[in-house]
Image 1 (cartoon, rainbow, N blue to C red):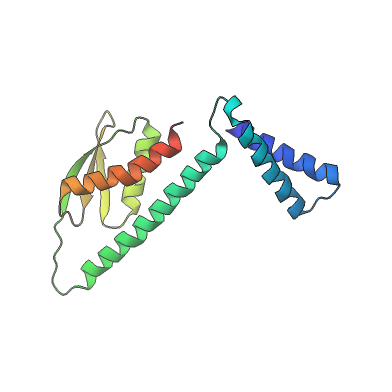
Image 2 (image 1 turned 90 degrees about the vertical axis):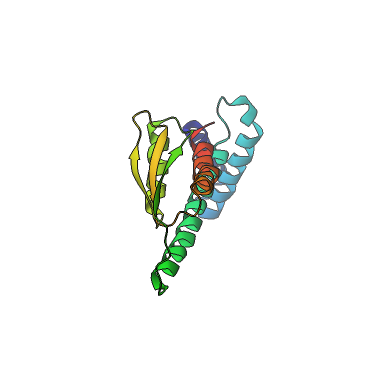
Length: 159
């Protein structure tokens, strides 16, 4: 992936050199030309095209921001209600993530989302113990985390 980014930058700078124009628009055109060339030749690279992974990172960030606003709004609604209707609980989330980095990222994303907190991770890293402020259905919450955060993390970290 790093080699593809460097090659793309080299193509952009060669494009600028050929036109003897060191402006940002000329660099942008060269960079886009580099993306096109690397995209056409991506089947010859041992790794996937680097923009696929970059797109996966952008999707993960957008998912986190969406979940942050949704959960913040839900916590705010619980706070302003005159009667407390929360059902706190702890659930064990069996994860398919393998590396320590993936499990750490998942637990950090869970902790940064209001209303949830990762309490502990099993020794093998296969189970996360999560405290949630309002658990209606533990299986539903577990499925929601697996379908959103876990799936997005696997798209970013696995080829």
